[in-house]
Each structure stands twice: as structure tokens, then as C-alpha cells.
Amino acid sequence: MATALPSTAFCQTSFTFPSQNPCKVKSPSLIFRTKSHGHIRCSAKKKISFVDQILDYIEGGPKLRKWYGAPDLLPKDESDAEDEDEFPEKNEVRDAVLVTDGDSEIGQMIILSLIVKKARVKALVKDKRTAMEAFGTYVESMAGDASSKPFLKKALRGVRAIICPNEGFLSNGGDLQGVKHVILLSQLSVYRGSGGIQALMKNNARKLAEKDESTLVASGIPYTIIRVGMLQDTPGGTQGFSFEKGSAEKGSLSKEDAAFICVEALDVVPQVGFTFEAVNGEEKVSDWKERLTRLMEKSEQ
Image (cartoon, rainbow, N blue to C red; front, side, top):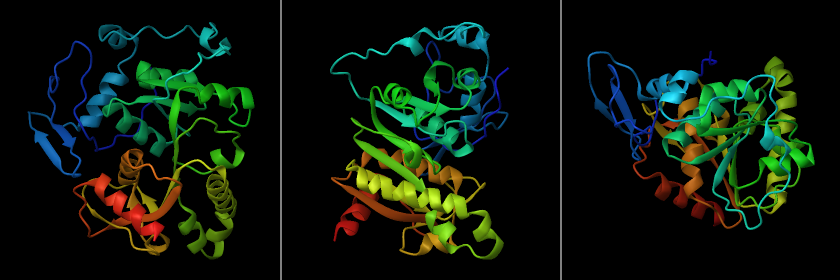
């Protein structure tokens, strides 16, 4: 049985499964998030969020996967043949997005948003079988030591961009050769603003966040660092935003909104890199590509 994933309330486009018609489910209420971060509702008898429907499909188990065309999972005692493949094709197409910490709550939110956008998704996870049971063939899940050069090289095959929702990967990782864009969700401002016991408790996380940022800046890879406020378990898409300098230290941001911004940042690749802060506030964003582009231009001045 699949492991339960966090129920989120955000999507950006409709999600269509093979042999299925959009909006055709048993008794749903579909909630679509548009680029303007608004919602369009298709109501029915029972109100079920659109992402809950995705989870229902994805977590339906082998029988449902067979129904919409995905292959069966490997038996537990069978090794993965592809894990032994160490010979990638030359001139490989780089079109995948790699999500680190794929079994974390916010990592799963990012993965679901990417699935809805029909992106090719790879994810680093602790338990590959659990991830396969949860996401089926919509995600290429990989479990291993990211500090291992052979494993990292295999994980990066076909990857054009990396989204890091938590600290630690960049600090411990190796060469990211071939990657065109790295997006880092950083809580460094929150850690620096902590005092007393909280500061002691978050000291290690702060060091990792600082090392992640400095490693990324020195890598030479185009990067986007999103410094967010305290992450909250609140519904996304219900509040506005603030990008003011210094806002992340005292402000907060919905985890769903944070995941949404990470995915939107994929469409704005800087020449070198840029860092901006994001918390929930009063500003309504109707065009994220345009808003992020303006933030990037401002950071270059």
C-alpha cells in the first residue's frame, strides 16, 4: 500500500491520465491553479481538491497503475537492472528536473506540481520502493549517497535543472556538470534571525544553509536562491506576497506557495545567478515569469 503524501491544494494546469478524460472522476470538486495563482472550480457533489485526486490516482496501487498503463513494480527481491547501467548515451537530451529530498513534505509538493506541468521528473529519495509505490512511473526515483561520484553522475543524467527544497545537498554533493540551472529554497534568513534556544537548535541547519549558498554561488552554474520566511502549513494561493529585502527574517510563507515559486522559477534562468526574498504579503502576482524577471533585473543593478 502506498505511503500517504501530504494533501496540498495547488495545481497550475489540468492533469490528464492516459485513457482518461480531464475532469472525469467519481465525485470530485476540481480546483485548478492558473498562472495568476487564482482558482477555477468545477463543482460536484463532494468537494475533493484536485491534488487529492492526483494522489488518489497515483496511490491507487498496482491494479490502478495497470489500468492506466504503467508497468508493475519490481518484486522486492529483484534488483533494478537500470541501476547497473553505467553507460549513458552520448549527446543525451537534458530535459529533466531533479528534486532533492524527494520524500520530504515540501519536496513532494514540488514533485506534484511538476507532474501536473507534465515535466520529466527525477527525485532523490531515501526509499526507492516507497517512492515508486507513491508516484508510479511519473517520477524516476533514485536512492543512494549523493556524495558518491558514480551515484551522482547517474542521478544527473538527462537533468537540466535541480530544485533543492532543503539544505544539505549542495554542501555534500559533488560535481554538477551539465546542469543548466539550480534553484535553492533557503531558510538562511530565518536561521540568522533566531535567538536563544532556537538559535542553538538551528545552528547546524544554519551552517548547512550557509555552505549550500556559498557552494552554489561558487559553482559557476546559473542559480536562483529563494530566501523564504518561516515555512507554514497553511493553504497556498490564498494570500499575496512580499519580496522586500529583510522580509524573510521576520515573515512567513505557506509551504505550498514556496513549492509553487520554486517551480515557477524554472522559467526564469539567470545569466549568472540571483537571490531574492519571498514571504506572504499583500502583493498579488498575476504573471510570475514577468515578476521574477523584474526581481532578477533589480538584483543586477
